[in-house]
Image (cartoon, rainbow, N blue to C red):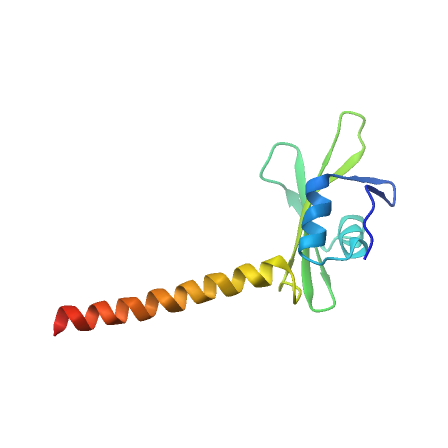
Amino acid sequence: MGYSRTYQGIIWTNHALERLKDRKIPQEYAWKTFRFPDGSKQGKSGGSQEFTKKIDSYSVTLIAKQNDKKEWIILSAWIDPPIQGSIDVKDHHKTKGSTVSWIVKTIFKMFKITS
């Protein structure tokens, strides 16, 4: 899957391209989210916009901002649920494993306290 710094006339930051690669999001999905969003709202950082779009069974979110020349710059993107094999799936499993481990440890501690 190839990614381009200037795709469909839009500037993509290195961070955005890394997130697309890490999350295995096709740049086409991100572009469609920006160009034909189901919804948008003001982003958390000054002047940014958050765009969302449902594509297939995924919800794609994109953060973009205009520069001084009024050119759109894509800052970041994510997808839910995460695509199999992406970094977010790996992180989810780490978190899930940590949660299970914490529950087991907590149960053992409870039995030690009450014994």
